[in-house]
Image (cartoon, rainbow, N blue to C red; front, side, top):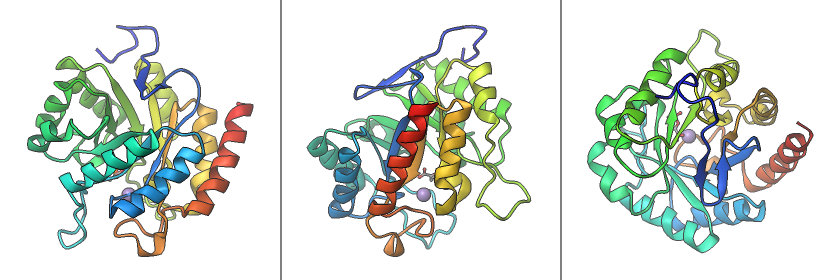
Amino acid sequence: LVSRKKKPDDTIVTVHGENIGDGQAHFIMGPCAVESYDQVKEVAQAIKKQGLKLLRGGAFKPRTSPYDFQGLGLDGLKILRQVADEEDLAVVSEILNPVDMEAALDYVDVIQIGARNMQNFELLKVAGSVKKPVLLKRGLSATIEEFMYAAEYIHAQGNNQIILCERGIRTYEKATRNTLDISAVPILKKETHLPVVVDVTHSTGRKDLLLPATKAAIAIGADAVMAEVHPDPAVALSDSAQQMDIEQFNEYMAAAKAFAEKV
Ligand code: PEP
Ligand code: MN
């Protein structure tokens, strides 16, 4: 169902007026995790000022250590919704557990399935049965074929509003947090009709690589770029080393937009 052989034309996923897959570069920006109303508000205002529409933020966080901040849960989704409504933005947020899906639908515009859950088949089936777009991230060690089969699980339940996200894969290389598999973008665009996003934050894990990775993503045909922004990354409760502050975000956006216009 996700194969381009079945549907030759591009699927466009429309979120709050943003047509992801229309050939333009879109941006999904926001903090790694929702920490407070004020924190989300500050980032959302910066995003709005840049003319962007898509606010990301984790309320249910899949942390490697059980002792790390696990997210604010439903309260976090409520903060995202309130701020997004105030700033005229759409909410992209991860759901970890199928039991939270129904409640989340009241607050979230795009359901994110994280890398660690790419093959959580029961979660994929539940995401396939909702009437909201799903942003599916590639698993840490998933092949492109496995990634496409995961999307197939969602589509098979009737939900064709799927955005694929390359977020880096595990390799032996330690210079970056993960290895951005940039060639996955044109392969996914060729093999499927779905829009493709590149998460430059979790793939590189390096602030100095966010802009070059963004340029590479746009040049190679990505439909959108995702990155993390925090008002004060040094005190962030997760991913503090790799989030941009507001000033860095504004500089990054200026350069990314200028580049996108030339492509
Ligand atoms: C995230 O985007 O918040 C996240 C946890 O990313 P990933 O699932 O790609 O690790
Ligand atoms: Mn993060």
